[in-house]
Structure formats: C-alpha cells, structure tokens
Image (cartoon, rainbow, N blue to C red; front, side, top):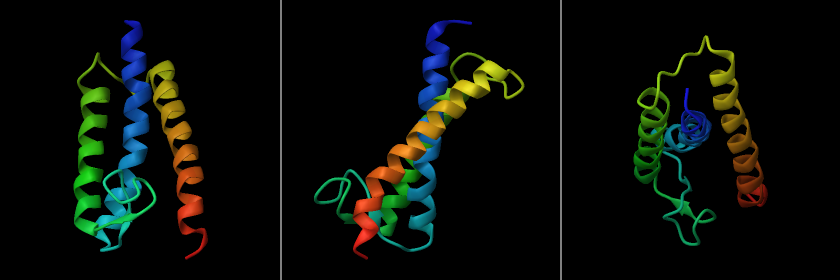
Length: 104
C-alpha cells in the first residue's frame, strides 16, 4: 500500500466527520456556520446551504476513502488512520463552534 493512501484515508475521515453537523443541521431546518457565511465559519448559513455543504463533504469523503486504494475496515491500520482524521476533525470542530454558540 502506498503512503498517499493513508493520507487520503486520514482526510477522508476528516471530511466524513465534517459532513455530519452540516447535513444534520441542514435537514433539521436549522442555520449553522459554513465557510460561506459572513464572517466565514462564524456567521450562520441557511439550512439549504448546510445540506449542500454536508453532502459535498460526504462526497469528498467517499472519493478519498472508497476510490483511493482499497480501503477495508478490517484492516486495523487503515481504520485507525481514518479514525485519527475523524477524531482530530471532531475536536477542531468542537473548538471552532463552541464560541459561536456560547452566547446563544
């Protein structure tokens, strides 16, 4: 397996986790911060923007995980790399969104 497969799986995990809050807030009809808001990442974008942003992140995760190399959840190293990317993105998102929602 080539080194860049692991890089793809790492970022695939990150994009997968990033898709969750945007898509779930969007389909719930709630506004949520996106890079397209003003200011980016702090202002709120409409629900439909979040649905599209969440789906785009999910598509990118799919391409990185399922179309690069041959990812297998049974391969501990591959699953671990994806999981590390997911955990790091989750922690970063929690830190980024906490101040946005602290005053609400």
